[in-house]
Length: 418
Ligand code: UD1
Image (cartoon, rainbow, N blue to C red; front, side):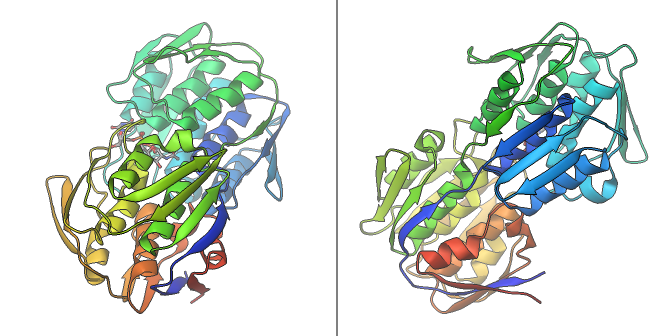
């Protein structure tokens, strides 16, 4: 399992490079199921979740080979239409194979997904969309069994909520459907758009220019493509907070500042000096941290995936911050752990009220999930004394060599295996 041991209170300084985006790489790997040719992907981060997706594809008969940050994926000979519970339970994004598998083989059997412990995470929008495209869907023994004997048919699909995963699944299914699929109220995150750009490289005609609509022209054959994944905006945001919370001065390189708009606005409101120059973001803490009001929303609103990390920073603000979570129902699992470090936080009605304290104190805490775990590492960097963050396998799902990147900035953090 392993833990991080952190000696807090050291200001971080220097430059750190952002890795490729996990949440873009995963749907793009699933998209490789659409073609019989070999796709070559670059800037793939070394993460536990990427391994899980690789294994999930391999189980279906796909050849997946990794060399450094490159990945080749060849789905020329699919041997199975079923994914195993063992893998899908580990990561919700494995469910993204449903759309492309069904489109390619006219049938798919995928377990109901697992993933982070951040509340009820239904898949109704995925299933409703596929059903509208002509798939017959049954849920039996904890598996989604989908068949489309006559193939999938393009149609108009409206999402009540712009779900990231449902948008990706339906786009992937639409690529091999007959006719045109139109998604109204889709998610338009940078990761969804990255997958769309990959699909365009594969020869799929997609129009995503209209704000509230994505139009996919289905086609019979999809070509393999070479593609480089966008940088990880959530990792970039986490590293920027690491600099600020430790009272340091760091430059985050290789990220795309345009993907971090709302987040950077909030950091500035908190009194952080942000300088942007050609894909590098410099964050400097000038004095006290101001309290903040944040509400998580669909992109381009404030990302729920940066909410726990920003909460850690708000714990040290001068005054009262209010953070409201509207995307997931159980995304304050880091709060009891932050309290153990001396944070003053009240929780209720999908929001937390944080009364800033002058300092946090190091202690033992447990990572509840990927981003909540990252929030505890950040708190540990700022805290007085030694912190130990347990269950870091959660953090390894979403952060590549986090302790190495932070150590290179001067942090005293090490991994200790059990
Ligand atoms: C993706 C991201 C995750 C991020 C989330 C933000 C990946 C691999 N993961 O997750 O890091 O926090 O987007 O939106 O890209 N919902 C339904 N029915 C559905 C689908 C979703 O009610 O069929 C609800 C969920 O319960 C949740 C909300 O919509 O409350 C957001 O879910 P969704 O956007 O689908 O997130 P994911 O794709 O799971």
